Image 1 (cartoon, rainbow, N blue to C red):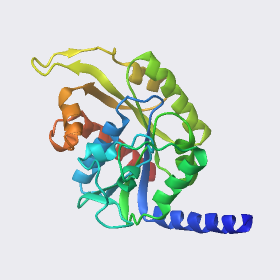
Image 2 (image 1 turned 45 degrees about the horizontal axis):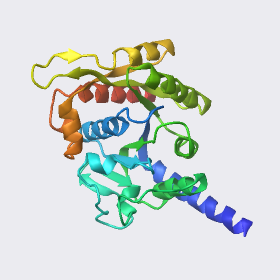
Image 3 (image 1 turned 45 degrees about the vertical axis):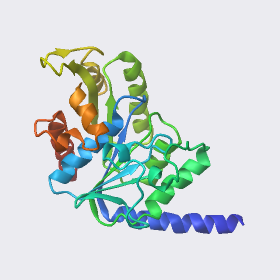
Image 4 (image 1 turned 90 degrees about the vertical axis):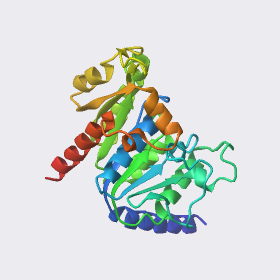
Length: 270
């Protein structure tokens, strides 16, 4: 029985590697703390890349709180074709555990081995096809899901770490930086989300959660700072309405962030 299990794992590893071999670039989006807007960042980066003409996929690896379908207005939906990602547009597809749940409000009450198995299945049993970019939206922290992704996607271009400016988030961000170092994962840079509140009436910016903490932490660790994203009601509304902000606003702060990530990966190739 143990031998059968080993054979199954070997076959699954082969399928995963075949899948990954068709994907040019793999980028992981992670955070040390929950509630920092990581899925908002992931969805906007992915859409920004798709708008540039790249073929992009998102793997929603947050099994306990899969929010990527919400960001694209597909909450409660099921894939159009079995074994394939959900097609958002010609250049963008997403995969999430919520697509395979009978009731999207049912919790995933799983221990580590089950979560590891599901992530591997989403990589091995889904026909991702050829992609320019695969973005992996991780749950917060440094537990089973981030570790599984880091050990499975070994040829990852790097990770983007999302934080908010206050110290309670930055303390956990430092753990994410340490995690990346232990797993020898390149850190493409830090993004400071919720960096100042933009008043919808007068446009004045108020630093509710302070500002600059993400940039100073990046400098402290010798990492690139990819940019600030303000706490803007329009960004929140866009996500809730199923159309990421970058798709509605050519001046979105995510435009510059996408450019920076793209350039960093291109420079790495060169």
